[in-house]
Length: 287
Image (cartoon, rainbow, N blue to C red):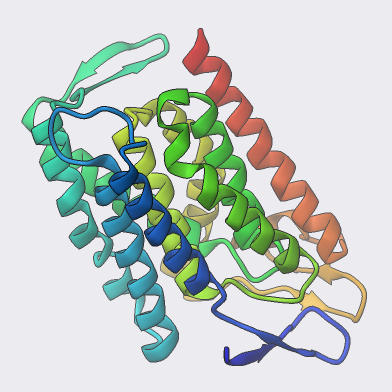
């Protein structure tokens, strides 16, 4: 039913079903529509949060499918999420969401109208693309987004119902992904990235989101700087047991630079890094 691709970091490179992230898109969309029709959604005086979230996740999944089918170039993938920011902009305007952000040691920064037409599109574009760029290892594409989503949900109990079912479903996929039995694919990574961005905008959790995604931003910055200055992409060598690299062009290669690690060890280290930044985000938001 799903196309199979070789697992590059397993002995013998076994074929693994790819693109299971589509099931998350379908489940989450149905779940959010049921939440809307059942009247269980958080009270709103304007545009519906579950319907807006469903539209964003659908577009993220569609974008991932396009990438799987057509192997889109990054210049297209970078800006396509801007289309998905349109329903979020409409929701923010109609529901009167805060247009400011409070930064530690700096204070409150008011963006005004620029929040709707500049900041929201940037949030969607940056989060979706940076989440998609960190992958290639079993569990990496599923565990790290789950950590961030759990943190955002903990800070927004009023909107917990929106993500409770989808999070459970994503965690099930993460278990199979961590075991190397499935890949979520681009459809999964784009959908969950769009999910995180949209949920953070809807719940006004801009600063926690910013802190939580810093490892993603660091990874993407290393990748883009390497391509810009050296015209070379990040890659790791696999000797049948461990991964190692001779350069530092991404978060994965930075951690494995002349330091052989098993795939499980590497995924665990990166997951701990995300957990640490998410914990900082939680503490900062609660202070």
